[in-house]
Image (tube, rainbow, N blue to C red; front, side, top):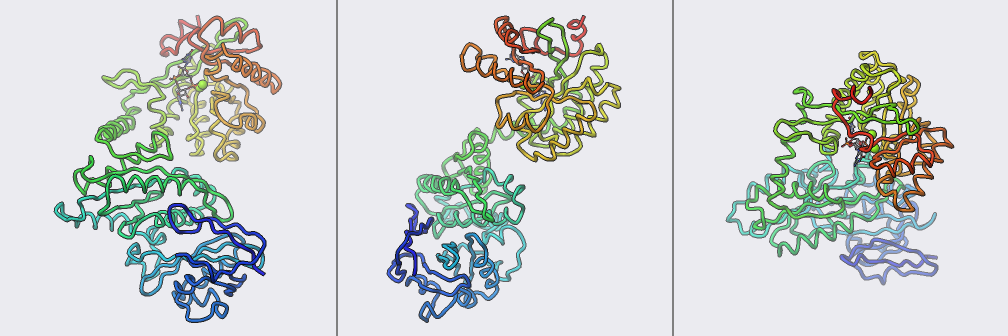
Length: 556
Ligand code: C2E
Ligand code: MG
Ligand code: MG
């Protein structure tokens, strides 16, 4: 009647993490494990169970005389309806039961076929539970997750005096999920909450009885280790967590891969006071995220200086517009046949007092992160349109637009305003976007691109060949120009780059799009591109980007 099940144990702990079914019969009563196992039918009637299952759930009866709902009812009547929902759901699910004496049971349900479900029950140490959950009123994420929250953690840490023996080997892990935001945005907030619960379960699985596990904020969690051999213990835990959180999660039948980065701070190893643990673990987490996500970093003193500099940069960038420290430089784009200028690309610079000209690569990502890009982007559009009015009618101006600007949904309006206030004809404005833009919110982005095109503004795809699914995007939107990324031009001596350049040029011709080569530095590159049908070029060979005052010299 039953199928044989193979339980694969996680090599690091005793919980079951994957189940395969095969033909044959399985007698669960002989399975000796710290986890409880049971087969149930679709309404939850227990068909077979191992001794741990009956012991954990304190069953005085033969297993086949009870249903899962009866167990749940005995433990906590409020959870029965939740359990029934999961039984009826088409995919795997989990429910947590908290008994009056504060024992926690995790029930994982896996659907084997139409007739049978496998239930795995794990018992968690109650020391990890919050006192405030007793009233069952869900107040915030931390209560949903059944973890301590930030203020409780602060309270615990504040109580410990330096002479408290427990502080002698304190260590903290701050875990930040790498790709939580896109999942939350695409699958919805309920799915996001469920994902956080699953993450909390995995963290609890690797934590020890004495560890304090807390939900810090958003997609960040904290584990505080007490009285363990440091930094060995915290390193081991970081490695296990990285591995565990890299594995996919199943949310509403969909697979979610998030991964995590971890910041580590250990008392007496660079962190001198208990009060600094959270701050240092957070700085280490930022560092881990900034380098290569999916990694862990120990706190280092230099992180504090870096964070201060970053903060200072942020404050100064926020007032750079007001202080008129931003400038546009312009780089000519020429027709390769007659070498005449057909347009200029506007490239932003930040003139920081005492620090010289700062390149956009050093501050545009920051402006995007702190939301300042919207104001800066608006200013670039207005300034470029106004300054282009002084040039001959046949010369266009190209403006770079950040993907973040499309998120605000005011971009079309900003372009309209820039054209109106300057008097520039829309046909003289070109917007440059990168392939990455089209990955997120493809529908709303495309709508904005169509609206811009309807106004007469042309759209160029910048840095072509460096992103993903390029061909797909070319198909979804009629770009008027493709800009071959300068990396291909730079490595033109290789056969591969030459082949790619030729392919891009013929693709552009077939799709009736102009092709411009970026980063042209030598006559040799220019000649090869021209001979192979490239129409326009931009690069140091023609001119470096120049301040607006020098444009007249170039167009004369
Ligand atoms: P991009 O749009 O691909 O601009 C071309 C970059 O290549 C410019 O760097 C330009 O100075 C540089 N370049 C041009 N010709 C050559 C060459 O022959 N050799 C070499 N090695 N480099 C060359 P820049 O000005 O530092 O800008 C970097 C990036 O910053 C731009 O790449 C663009 O993505 C972004 N950016 C610039 N201005 C703005 C802006 O106003 N808004 C936004 N959102 N991004 C901007
Ligand atoms: Mg560009
Ligand atoms: Mg480019």
